[in-house]
Amino acid sequence: MNTPVISVRNLGKRYLLGMGGGERYRALRDVIANSFKNILRKKHPKDITRELWAVKGLSFEVNRGEKIGIIGRNGAGKSTLLKLISSITEPTHGEIHLRGRVASLLEVGTGFHPELTGKENIFMNAAILGMTKAEIKRKYSDIVEFAEVEKFLDTPVKRYSSGMYVRLAFAVAAYLESEILIVDEVLAVGDAGFQKKCLGKMEDATKEGRTVLIGSHNMPLVLNLCPRAILLDKGRMVVDGKSTDIVKHYLAMARSGNGEVVWQDSINAPGNDIVRLHSARILQNDYEGPTADVSISKEIQIEIIYWNLKKDIELYSAIWLRSGMGVDVLASSNVDAISLTKDYWFGRPQPAGMFKSVCRLPANFLNEGRYNISVAVCKIPDHVQVIQVDLLSFDVHDTGEMRKGFYGGWLGVVRPRLAWQTDKIS
Image (cartoon, rainbow, N blue to C red; front, top):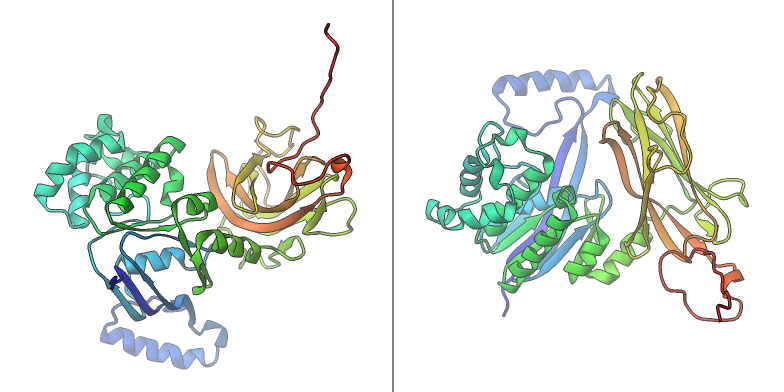
């Protein structure tokens, strides 16, 4: 009988929000102080500490050599689950049984000391992950070669870019001779070439019998690398099974039924003290309001409305478009070098207030099918302030105009009308 490498039973992680919300060690003075606070809070119900279950009631098993994708929208509990399995945080209730050593890469620079050099951090981080000194010396040259940071080994890592951090941290985790490798969305920071190398390394890990867990919003990565996936929503498991089925389920669940998402209250809207989202909408001229069903032959408008909370901030808006199976179709923004038209507010300090950005997709451009939109508002230069992945979904419906004279499906995620001309040359 195949004994599971990871066994999770009724796992839960609770965080306390509000006054005194942190779960921590409490001295006698804290107990006495909190007793008085609780008496006072009876007069102020809004100040009572609220509970947030980041993970609740999860149970599953992972066998040796499996590659599993952990997917779900922002706040679904993916990162919390991976931190629990990595023993970075402790569960509120439930059990996790691990059979083997764990190497994890969950956040950029985890285990690194900013004042130490790259070389010093390799030895320190490897020791934190459980390597012996002999193992580290034996693997050192391989780690350096994989990370591609040999020129900067004697430089303090506080001067490293996020990409250099990731390369070095992944190299250490990848070369630790562990039975379980856990990787979160952090790989999205690396360049395309390094990501490809990382994926190859994870493929090699499973061929060697290691178990790999990947938390990601990248559906093509999950589909290509993970035969199995687990879908989370609000800390609970929605479904566990074949990754192709789970990704379809996730994309269907992520769909906004009316082509619109609105946050009326800027305090609770996604964002920070600079920018918060107000709404995102899909519009088409044939409809009076937002819609999740669009005609292939009509222009599509994607509208982002946000609050700029600080004056004299330079911001730009961006979208990512993915097909129903998670294939990246396009990315666009109102940056001058990218936008087809000149946007008045790009590159100008914005006063505090509400702003609306609209991106227009031409008619007869997308093929029929379902698409998912991610939106972002960023501060120049290239600092993301708020991002919502797969925030909206919509379906493109064929009018039949381009199907006159033939039948069957149409290859590709885009289906533009292009200019053709045939001439007799002899």
